[in-house]
Image (cartoon, rainbow, N blue to C red; front, side, top):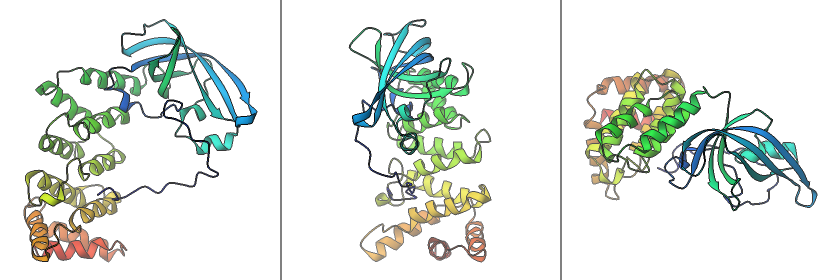
Length: 324
Protein backbone atom coordinates (compact mmCIF):
# COMPACT_ATOMS: atom_id res chain seq x y z
CA UNK A 1 0.00 0.00 0.00
CA UNK A 2 3.00 2.31 0.22
CA UNK A 3 2.60 3.16 -3.44
CA UNK A 4 -1.05 4.19 -3.10
CA UNK A 5 -1.49 7.71 -4.41
CA UNK A 6 2.20 8.61 -4.04
CA UNK A 7 2.33 12.36 -4.49
CA UNK A 8 4.30 13.64 -7.46
CA UNK A 9 7.26 15.72 -6.32
CA UNK A 10 8.04 18.74 -8.49
CA UNK A 11 11.59 19.11 -9.77
CA UNK A 12 13.89 20.62 -7.22
CA UNK A 13 16.40 22.06 -9.70
CA UNK A 14 20.11 21.51 -9.20
CA UNK A 15 20.95 19.23 -6.27
CA UNK A 16 21.59 21.18 -3.10
CA UNK A 17 24.14 20.48 -0.44
CA UNK A 18 22.87 17.72 1.83
CA UNK A 19 22.22 18.78 5.41
CA UNK A 20 21.92 16.73 8.53
CA UNK A 21 18.47 16.64 10.24
CA UNK A 22 19.80 18.77 13.10
CA UNK A 23 20.77 21.56 10.69
CA UNK A 24 17.31 21.69 9.15
CA UNK A 25 14.39 23.50 10.69
CA UNK A 26 11.46 21.17 10.09
CA UNK A 27 8.11 22.55 8.94
CA UNK A 28 6.37 19.88 11.01
CA UNK A 29 5.99 20.25 14.77
CA UNK A 30 3.96 17.06 15.18
CA UNK A 31 6.89 14.60 15.61
CA UNK A 32 8.24 16.67 18.50
CA UNK A 33 5.00 16.79 20.53
CA UNK A 34 5.63 13.36 22.14
CA UNK A 35 9.38 13.98 22.44
CA UNK A 36 10.16 14.38 26.19
CA UNK A 37 13.43 16.12 25.36
CA UNK A 38 11.90 18.80 23.14
CA UNK A 39 10.57 22.14 24.36
CA UNK A 40 7.51 23.58 22.64
CA UNK A 41 7.00 27.32 22.87
CA UNK A 42 5.47 30.45 21.39
CA UNK A 43 8.20 32.99 20.69
CA UNK A 44 8.57 36.47 19.21
CA UNK A 45 11.41 37.44 16.87
CA UNK A 46 13.50 40.28 18.30
CA UNK A 47 16.14 40.43 15.58
CA UNK A 48 17.89 38.32 12.96
CA UNK A 49 21.55 38.73 12.04
CA UNK A 50 22.54 37.52 8.55
CA UNK A 51 26.15 36.70 7.62
CA UNK A 52 26.94 35.78 3.98
CA UNK A 53 28.92 32.57 3.41
CA UNK A 54 29.93 33.01 -0.26
CA UNK A 55 32.01 29.86 -0.57
CA UNK A 56 29.09 27.73 0.62
CA UNK A 57 26.45 29.74 -1.29
CA UNK A 58 24.63 30.09 1.99
CA UNK A 59 23.89 32.61 4.70
CA UNK A 60 24.34 32.16 8.44
CA UNK A 61 21.36 33.28 10.53
CA UNK A 62 21.34 34.05 14.25
CA UNK A 63 17.80 34.74 15.42
CA UNK A 64 17.16 36.38 18.78
CA UNK A 65 13.81 35.47 20.31
CA UNK A 66 11.65 36.33 23.28
CA UNK A 67 9.84 33.42 24.90
CA UNK A 68 6.17 34.30 25.29
CA UNK A 69 4.62 30.99 26.31
CA UNK A 70 6.18 27.62 27.14
CA UNK A 71 3.72 24.96 26.02
CA UNK A 72 5.82 21.97 27.01
CA UNK A 73 9.16 21.59 28.77
CA UNK A 74 10.70 22.69 32.03
CA UNK A 75 14.07 23.86 30.73
CA UNK A 76 12.72 27.14 29.37
CA UNK A 77 10.63 29.81 31.08
CA UNK A 78 8.31 32.46 29.68
CA UNK A 79 10.09 35.79 29.35
CA UNK A 80 13.54 34.28 28.74
CA UNK A 81 15.54 35.63 25.78
CA UNK A 82 17.00 32.89 23.62
CA UNK A 83 18.67 32.49 20.25
CA UNK A 84 18.68 29.88 17.52
CA UNK A 85 21.03 29.71 14.58
CA UNK A 86 21.08 28.00 11.22
CA UNK A 87 21.87 28.39 7.56
CA UNK A 88 19.77 29.20 4.53
CA UNK A 89 20.56 29.14 0.82
CA UNK A 90 21.81 32.47 -0.49
CA UNK A 91 19.79 32.25 -3.71
CA UNK A 92 16.16 33.23 -3.13
CA UNK A 93 14.80 30.99 -5.91
CA UNK A 94 16.71 28.05 -4.50
CA UNK A 95 15.23 28.80 -1.08
CA UNK A 96 11.73 28.56 -2.49
CA UNK A 97 12.51 25.16 -3.96
CA UNK A 98 13.91 24.02 -0.60
CA UNK A 99 10.83 24.90 1.44
CA UNK A 100 11.18 21.65 3.42
CA UNK A 101 13.76 23.56 5.49
CA UNK A 102 12.12 26.46 7.33
CA UNK A 103 15.42 28.30 7.53
CA UNK A 104 14.88 28.95 3.82
CA UNK A 105 11.33 30.27 4.01
CA UNK A 106 10.67 32.00 7.32
CA UNK A 107 11.33 35.76 7.10
CA UNK A 108 12.41 36.15 10.76
CA UNK A 109 11.29 39.77 10.82
CA UNK A 110 11.11 41.61 14.16
CA UNK A 111 7.77 41.01 15.92
CA UNK A 112 7.05 37.83 13.92
CA UNK A 113 5.48 35.14 16.09
CA UNK A 114 6.51 31.50 15.82
CA UNK A 115 5.56 28.25 17.48
CA UNK A 116 8.74 26.23 17.79
CA UNK A 117 10.22 22.95 18.91
CA UNK A 118 13.60 23.40 20.55
CA UNK A 119 16.41 21.39 22.10
CA UNK A 120 18.97 22.78 24.55
CA UNK A 121 22.19 24.03 23.00
CA UNK A 122 25.70 24.19 24.41
CA UNK A 123 25.20 27.63 25.96
CA UNK A 124 22.40 28.62 28.37
CA UNK A 125 20.66 31.05 25.99
CA UNK A 126 21.48 29.15 22.80
CA UNK A 127 18.95 26.59 21.64
CA UNK A 128 18.73 24.24 18.68
CA UNK A 129 15.77 24.89 16.43
CA UNK A 130 14.05 21.61 15.55
CA UNK A 131 10.82 22.83 13.93
CA UNK A 132 8.94 26.08 13.47
CA UNK A 133 5.69 27.48 12.13
CA UNK A 134 4.79 31.14 11.83
CA UNK A 135 1.50 32.24 13.40
CA UNK A 136 -0.49 35.45 13.07
CA UNK A 137 -1.03 36.02 16.77
CA UNK A 138 -1.09 34.32 20.15
CA UNK A 139 -4.76 33.57 19.41
CA UNK A 140 -3.90 31.69 16.20
CA UNK A 141 -5.68 28.29 16.09
CA UNK A 142 -2.32 26.56 15.65
CA UNK A 143 -1.21 27.82 19.09
CA UNK A 144 -4.34 26.42 20.74
CA UNK A 145 -3.89 23.20 18.77
CA UNK A 146 -0.33 22.77 20.03
CA UNK A 147 -1.52 23.34 23.60
CA UNK A 148 -4.28 20.80 23.15
CA UNK A 149 -1.99 18.20 21.58
CA UNK A 150 0.51 18.62 24.41
CA UNK A 151 -2.29 18.24 26.94
CA UNK A 152 -3.51 15.04 25.27
CA UNK A 153 0.02 13.69 25.21
CA UNK A 154 0.25 14.14 28.97
CA UNK A 155 -3.07 12.39 29.62
CA UNK A 156 -2.43 8.87 31.01
CA UNK A 157 -1.81 6.38 28.22
CA UNK A 158 -4.58 3.86 27.72
CA UNK A 159 -7.15 5.91 29.62
CA UNK A 160 -10.69 6.45 28.26
CA UNK A 161 -10.10 10.19 28.64
CA UNK A 162 -7.12 10.07 26.30
CA UNK A 163 -8.97 7.94 23.75
CA UNK A 164 -11.90 10.38 23.76
CA UNK A 165 -9.56 13.36 23.38
CA UNK A 166 -7.77 11.72 20.44
CA UNK A 167 -11.07 10.96 18.72
CA UNK A 168 -12.16 14.56 19.11
CA UNK A 169 -8.79 15.73 17.76
CA UNK A 170 -9.16 13.54 14.66
CA UNK A 171 -12.05 15.68 13.50
CA UNK A 172 -10.39 18.96 14.44
CA UNK A 173 -10.56 21.65 11.74
CA UNK A 174 -7.00 22.63 12.73
CA UNK A 175 -4.45 20.75 10.65
CA UNK A 176 -1.77 20.50 13.35
CA UNK A 177 -4.09 18.91 15.92
CA UNK A 178 -5.60 16.49 13.43
CA UNK A 179 -2.16 15.38 12.19
CA UNK A 180 -1.03 14.84 15.78
CA UNK A 181 -4.05 12.62 16.44
CA UNK A 182 -3.57 10.70 13.17
CA UNK A 183 0.02 9.90 14.11
CA UNK A 184 -0.96 8.99 17.67
CA UNK A 185 -3.68 6.47 16.76
CA UNK A 186 -1.82 5.22 13.69
CA UNK A 187 1.95 4.86 13.66
CA UNK A 188 2.33 5.34 17.42
CA UNK A 189 -0.59 2.99 18.29
CA UNK A 190 -1.89 5.05 21.22
CA UNK A 191 -5.06 2.96 20.99
CA UNK A 192 -5.69 -0.54 19.62
CA UNK A 193 -5.73 -1.03 15.87
CA UNK A 194 -9.46 -1.76 15.99
CA UNK A 195 -10.24 1.33 18.08
CA UNK A 196 -8.05 3.54 15.92
CA UNK A 197 -9.72 2.41 12.68
CA UNK A 198 -13.18 2.98 14.10
CA UNK A 199 -12.19 6.40 15.43
CA UNK A 200 -10.85 7.49 12.04
CA UNK A 201 -13.94 6.09 10.33
CA UNK A 202 -16.23 8.19 12.52
CA UNK A 203 -14.05 11.28 12.09
CA UNK A 204 -14.25 11.00 8.31
CA UNK A 205 -17.97 11.69 8.47
CA UNK A 206 -17.82 14.38 11.12
CA UNK A 207 -19.38 17.71 10.19
CA UNK A 208 -16.56 19.49 12.03
CA UNK A 209 -13.91 18.97 9.38
CA UNK A 210 -13.77 20.58 5.92
CA UNK A 211 -13.63 18.34 2.83
CA UNK A 212 -9.90 18.87 2.29
CA UNK A 213 -9.18 17.46 5.76
CA UNK A 214 -10.68 14.07 4.87
CA UNK A 215 -8.07 12.71 2.40
CA UNK A 216 -5.26 12.48 5.01
CA UNK A 217 -7.57 10.51 7.31
CA UNK A 218 -8.64 8.15 4.53
CA UNK A 219 -5.04 7.64 3.41
CA UNK A 220 -4.05 6.75 6.97
CA UNK A 221 -6.98 4.34 7.31
CA UNK A 222 -5.95 2.57 4.10
CA UNK A 223 -2.30 2.41 5.16
CA UNK A 224 -0.43 -0.49 6.73
CA UNK A 225 -1.12 0.98 10.15
CA UNK A 226 -4.65 -0.39 9.82
CA UNK A 227 -5.25 -2.29 6.58
CA UNK A 228 -3.56 -5.70 6.71
CA UNK A 229 -4.76 -7.13 3.41
CA UNK A 230 -2.97 -10.44 3.92
CA UNK A 231 -5.31 -11.15 6.83
CA UNK A 232 -8.31 -10.93 4.53
CA UNK A 233 -11.77 -10.80 6.08
CA UNK A 234 -11.01 -9.67 9.61
CA UNK A 235 -12.69 -6.91 11.67
CA UNK A 236 -10.31 -4.01 11.08
CA UNK A 237 -10.09 -4.69 7.35
CA UNK A 238 -13.90 -4.67 7.31
CA UNK A 239 -13.87 -1.20 8.85
CA UNK A 240 -11.45 0.04 6.19
CA UNK A 241 -13.38 -1.33 3.20
CA UNK A 242 -16.78 -0.32 4.57
CA UNK A 243 -15.56 3.23 5.25
CA UNK A 244 -14.01 3.66 1.81
CA UNK A 245 -17.19 2.32 0.19
CA UNK A 246 -19.29 4.76 2.18
CA UNK A 247 -17.02 7.64 1.16
CA UNK A 248 -17.44 6.58 -2.45
CA UNK A 249 -21.22 6.66 -2.14
CA UNK A 250 -21.88 9.45 0.37
CA UNK A 251 -18.71 11.54 0.32
CA UNK A 252 -17.98 14.75 -1.54
CA UNK A 253 -18.56 14.08 -5.25
CA UNK A 254 -15.47 16.12 -6.15
CA UNK A 255 -13.34 13.66 -4.15
CA UNK A 256 -14.95 10.53 -5.58
CA UNK A 257 -11.95 9.72 -7.83
CA UNK A 258 -9.74 9.67 -4.73
CA UNK A 259 -12.08 7.33 -2.83
CA UNK A 260 -12.22 5.09 -5.91
CA UNK A 261 -8.43 4.94 -6.08
CA UNK A 262 -8.15 4.04 -2.41
CA UNK A 263 -10.91 1.44 -2.53
CA UNK A 264 -9.53 0.01 -5.76
CA UNK A 265 -5.97 -0.14 -4.43
CA UNK A 266 -7.26 -1.93 -1.33
CA UNK A 267 -9.32 -4.52 -3.21
CA UNK A 268 -7.54 -5.12 -6.52
CA UNK A 269 -4.35 -6.06 -4.70
CA UNK A 270 -3.28 -9.74 -4.82
CA UNK A 271 -4.47 -11.24 -1.55
CA UNK A 272 -3.04 -14.70 -2.26
CA UNK A 273 -0.98 -16.50 -4.88
CA UNK A 274 -3.75 -19.10 -4.98
CA UNK A 275 -6.37 -17.69 -7.45
CA UNK A 276 -9.30 -19.31 -5.63
CA UNK A 277 -8.18 -18.07 -2.23
CA UNK A 278 -7.43 -14.65 -3.69
CA UNK A 279 -10.97 -14.35 -5.09
CA UNK A 280 -12.57 -15.61 -1.90
CA UNK A 281 -10.66 -13.20 0.34
CA UNK A 282 -11.70 -10.28 -1.87
CA UNK A 283 -15.32 -11.42 -2.04
CA UNK A 284 -15.47 -11.92 1.73
CA UNK A 285 -14.42 -8.35 2.34
CA UNK A 286 -16.93 -7.01 -0.18
CA UNK A 287 -19.77 -9.18 1.16
CA UNK A 288 -19.17 -7.75 4.62
CA UNK A 289 -20.20 -4.31 3.34
CA UNK A 290 -23.94 -4.01 3.76
CA UNK A 291 -24.05 -0.27 4.47
CA UNK A 292 -23.86 1.24 1.91
CA UNK A 293 -25.99 -1.25 -0.01
CA UNK A 294 -24.17 -3.06 -2.84
CA UNK A 295 -26.35 -1.52 -5.53
CA UNK A 296 -25.42 1.98 -4.36
CA UNK A 297 -21.71 1.19 -4.62
CA UNK A 298 -22.16 -0.24 -8.11
CA UNK A 299 -24.23 2.78 -9.15
CA UNK A 300 -21.56 5.22 -7.93
CA UNK A 301 -18.89 3.32 -9.87
CA UNK A 302 -21.01 3.04 -13.01
CA UNK A 303 -21.66 6.77 -12.87
CA UNK A 304 -17.91 7.38 -12.96
CA UNK A 305 -17.55 5.04 -15.91
CA UNK A 306 -20.37 6.85 -17.74
CA UNK A 307 -18.63 10.17 -17.07
CA UNK A 308 -15.52 8.91 -18.84
CA UNK A 309 -13.31 7.91 -15.91
CA UNK A 310 -9.98 6.51 -17.12
CA UNK A 311 -9.22 4.84 -13.79
CA UNK A 312 -8.65 1.13 -14.58
CA UNK A 313 -9.85 0.26 -11.10
CA UNK A 314 -13.42 1.35 -11.86
CA UNK A 315 -14.38 -1.62 -14.11
CA UNK A 316 -12.51 -4.01 -11.80
CA UNK A 317 -14.45 -2.75 -8.78
CA UNK A 318 -17.76 -2.95 -10.64
CA UNK A 319 -17.04 -6.57 -11.59
CA UNK A 320 -15.90 -7.45 -8.06
CA UNK A 321 -18.95 -5.87 -6.42
CA UNK A 322 -21.35 -7.57 -8.82
CA UNK A 323 -19.66 -10.92 -8.28
CA UNK A 324 -19.79 -10.65 -4.50
